[in-house]
Length: 168
Image (tube, rainbow, N blue to C red; front, side, top):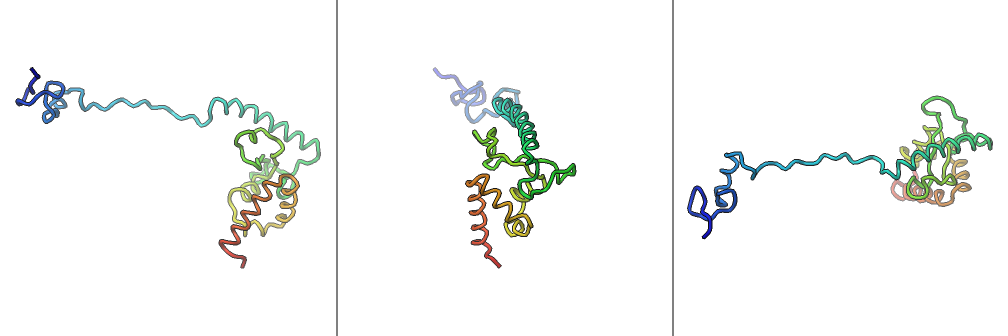
């Protein structure tokens, strides 16, 4: 014998009520419509492994800067200018082949740049704007010597720009 709803003669669905009278459970303070508590977890910006690597990375950057000073190559790779203490002139380490995988700690693909030129060349400016810089041709020569892969990547970017916008 099945149980009968408290309000009608239909069989019970749960909590003493049929499917059609379940709303009474909410009125009575039942558990049917209680929102489930959500676990609020913060996604970390860096994994545990990356945090450990980052500590090593900052040490390596300091050593890299000191090595470049000792070699006499402590100047901007892009413009050839010396570094200064202004916001645009302080030293930034750029990773020619990004910061992913094994390239994160590989000094062969690191270059020292002035912050302003680093942002302009690799992140903000269009190819047309970059070609107006007086050091552009010298930078391409230095880049070709340092990393041929990055040089060809930049040439592809130039070709795409010329295909899209034409050379006026």
